[in-house]
Image 1 (cartoon, helix red, strand yellow):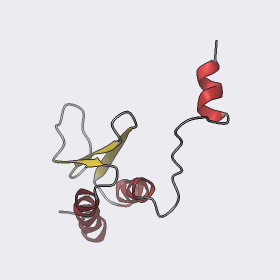
Image 2 (cartoon, helix red, strand yellow; image 1 turned 135 degrees about the vertical axis):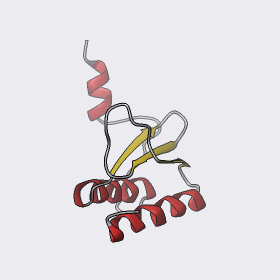
Image 3 (cartoon, rainbow, N blue to C red; image 1 turned 90 degrees about the vertical axis):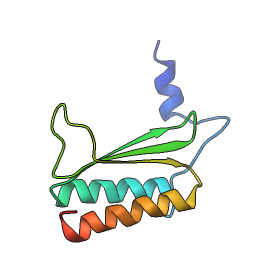
Length: 99
């Protein structure tokens, strides 16, 4: 019944991606948590393993129900340019508190 849990947390066979500290996905998520925790802004990150991309949605001055995000990044895992653009944007939010 719960074979999917064993597959999720047990030893994996087939493809397996380690998120090391230097990995772009791990660093982006850490930065998103930092911005969301220490500023008025909210950053939502979604990982889509079936297409190997990260979706980043940013609400300036915080998330409110019914409000559309202010900025979006769709980052293909391995796409250095889009990743760096997103990290620069998040860095500005983190350093300034406002954008």
